[in-house]
Length: 289
Ligand SMILES: O=P(O)(O)O[C@H]1O[C@H](CO)[C@@H](O)[C@H]1O
Ligand SMILES: O=c1cc[nH]c(=O)[nH]1
Image (cartoon, rainbow, N blue to C red; front, side, top):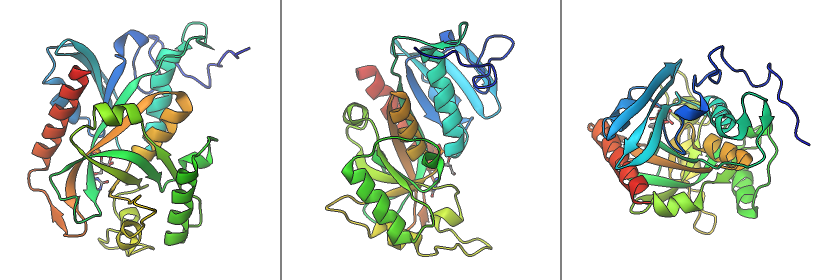
């Protein structure tokens, strides 16, 4: 027997839309392109045949339409895995909870969710300008201290190695993304494993005016090699997507436009063009499915 979800736990706005995303079930396509920057939503939807719906609330800007006849929703999430927890939970509720009765639906719907974001490389052979699909996300945040899930032996080994290598006072987590989407949408891109950090500066080893506690985090993470499993890049959401995707039963893939290489210390002057290339790649692979 499933339980009715109380008003305080799943909040529905007066117009029937879900609390943070401001969406009703009919506004959402089963394929979602998720971006960090609210201005990037239009960079996706400008390629649509037509846009049927637009809304926004806080950092969550949504455009739903079709691309080469395939219905797609583009949504921005803002930055960080805390936003991703909200985003994934509310997206899931739109398809897997009856918002009128507040009971979970008996038949589960799985969404295809593809992150199109920017990222910094920590390997010299992943240059600025390249496009990378994340096979695994390595969470250096604490989101998964608040949820239980099963981890594979490799995922546990990576998490323990990262904890030991960085001497972290908490246990990080490692989660694989969608194998199916990696094969279909990640085709032609570099395959890597992505460290997700709870910040852009100190947690990624950047020093502006404050010295990070782990100043050599890049050298330490990039030197991990578990029988060929290497960490390739830094960003701020992938592990949260993969964890919530596993918990909620959705296919999730994180794609990265590499705008910085932290080893060679270059930042791509054409970072917007790299992101546009990744958007076009993603839309075309979705249309080919
Ligand atoms: O370009 P987006 O999608 O925002 O992704 C990356 O860029 C932001 C930091 O500049 C973080 O959100 C990081 O994950
Ligand atoms: O270095 C980078 C570049 C983009 N996004 C990040 O989080 N880090």
